[in-house]
Image: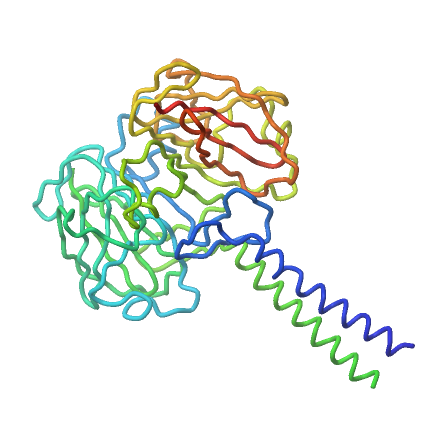
Length: 208
Length: 204
């Protein structure tokens, strides 16, 4: 009798273990994208949450928050909208991301940089406007490309629409960075757009 | 025999626990990463997302299936229901709500459109709503790149329009905004918990 009970319990457990997988499958994203989605077991018939969620960074640093205290603040100088993949135990540079190949600086949609006023990078004047930003990583330097093929998914870059290219050195971080991070930081000349993932960090210098 | 079953049970139980552990990790991926010279931002609990009209425009574009420019885009953040009662409690009735979390929700039109018969010139707007149990007042405001609705200024409104609040059968866990094609353009659909509101946008 006891054995029968245990057997039933076992079967029940197996059954209950399988359940989440089944409901996760039901929630598969409707369109073929190249990245997965998080929170697959949560109810959402419309649009699942991305596993590499989107984020935004402004310069001046924390512009929207500052604006709350000072509503008459003018326009921001620049903002970047990007997605944040995570390392998840993988080796990123030279493995997941091949050296010499285009990388969208994130995930999902191409990374978008919007200049609200003209900026100077490495003595080159960049007119105000919106750009797609992508990267060609190498072990010791990154090429950062400003491109005008806006509103595109990040997997395919139309290099005919490249506008500006900048080479910047890469440094090693002391601790691996789990989530790809882009953030503006104050510098003497204006701002650095800091980009970090895994054991690598690079800075693109802006002056205004 | 009994001990074998118990062992099997134990193994199964620990397997279940392990599986649950990983599930929890992926659903709340908040890790504060710090390095010596870098202020690393943790992931937002209410992550940002983007919705285009036409739907999935960027994917269509790299497949060479998008012949026209996009018409509209929304950038918003996605709080979770997390077992809370959302409307009438977390989101109070009668107050201006940022339609998301963190930065105020941005809607951009790449050409002139019409809402409620009024012309909306192309450009960026902040989208707010005043939620009530039976209807929502949708607000397009001209003050962009702002945080929340804390400094909402009615004088900068472009327009306000009332839309009915509809019930959805299954509660929506993560706050969601998406576009649906209609005969005259698109509906901007906004859903969370057991409520959905649709804002018709004429694009012809």
